[in-house]
Length: 126
Image (cartoon, rainbow, N blue to C red):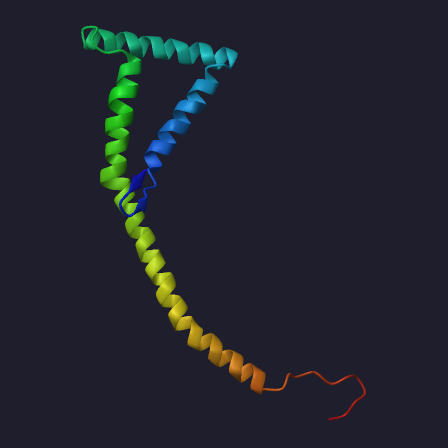
């Protein structure tokens, strides 16, 4: 999802959509599909009875769970955590890089000033 600051990860929405895709694929497997269809029909009947016929399983999935629950948890909990951790890691990498530059430069300068050891050919004396 795009926001003012860039792209939001929406991890739960990706997981939920992947689950739905895997569930749809599993329904095509003969024995597993039978049990998944059975569970789906029992759940759907329960929802229709519980809502006096106002909602179906598809309605609950597409109108309540996906857009409100999954998206809400993503927006209020998961995305802020991921963005904060990402910001901290990015800052640490920047600060770490600034600290490492002089160290690497100093080590490089010392190494270039010191003649390499073991550079003599066999049989030659120093």
